[in-house]
Amino acid sequence: MEGEIEKFIKVWISAILGLCYCYYIAARIPKGFLRLLSLIPILFLFITFPLKISSPNLVGYTSFFLVWLGTFKLLLFSFNQGPLALSPPNILHFISIASLPITPTQHRPTKQNNTTNKPKWLLPLKVLIFAMIARVYDYNEHLHPYFMLVLYCCHLYLGLEVVFAIVATPVRIIFGFEIESQFNEPYLSTSLQDFWGHRWNLMVSRILRPSIYDPVRRISTCFMDPSYAMLVAMLATFFVSGLMHELLYYYVIRVPPTWEVTCFFVLHGVCMVAEVATKKMVLRHGWRLHPVMSGLLVAAFLIVTADWLFFPQLLRNEMDKKSCEEYAIVIDFFKSRLPLHVFKSAH
Image 1 (cartoon, rainbow, N blue to C red):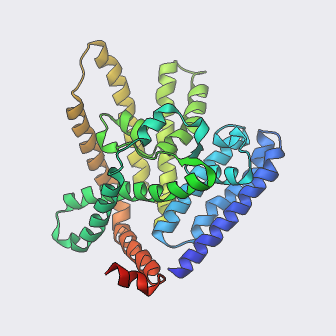
Image 2 (image 1 turned 180 degrees about the horizontal axis):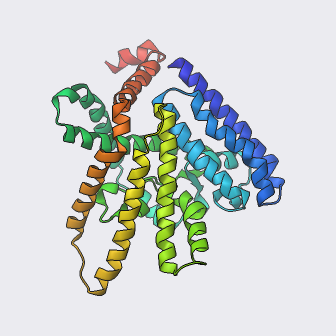
Image 3 (image 1 turned 180 degrees about the vertical axis):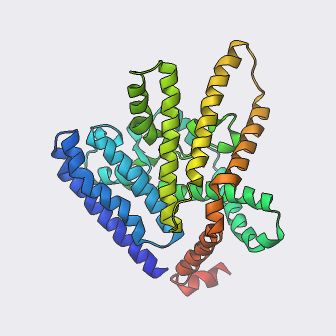
């Protein structure tokens, strides 16, 4: 684990140096093709950095922060768009905005504030449930596969919630920024549109909209009706999301892609397009499904399709077990470096 942490630190130091180049040199190049050309070496490095790490958890978060968020933000920055186009006052702010899921507090919308005002007891409860799930994996041979599937979903969601909560405090103190709200209680979703657009992985939605959805919709409007252009843009966004997930899976698992996860996102894109079209027709007649019923249908659809297409590649390579084992190793790693009297005083 010590070797993996050293690799992790080296990767992030290299990434920070690359972002310094973007701030001091690339930012002075006129926006457009020339700036994009100047950023290509950094984009290439960001894409290759996760290959230097083997730890499932460390490579997972590194690839999400650098390859997904970082590269997309830099691509938008090439054309003076996105969060980096807000002219961060100094290099520290630029680096933090480029490589972390954060936004300047002064630009944070009111709606986002509402999603972050959650009961104080909610996060400790999620941490407790996450720890319990890690322990339950020891007995997975005696549990029903469908019950384990629900645990995998909870593990993915709660793991991300806990990590972002841990990162949020130092980022807020050092940089004066807020961690972007990644989730808005996704288990309360009443439709696929609500789940993907307003409750799940919101930072990705905020990045994909200006980089994929808006350009595709704008171009498609030149050839078709605006309502159809919107549906095409939605499908394109889900397709790109699927490809990015395939790339993240490769970083974590290191096996050739099976394209199952791409099919998962394309399927959800098609179903979401159908849902939006159906809503328009149904609402004209004043009929609406009860939120409880629609929420149960959405949850069932997500679980079934995730079991079919999203999780199999992870489970075949036992990434759930490896991830939990790594959490235990990290805890033991830090315990071994704490003074002995800390443990004596705890007892």
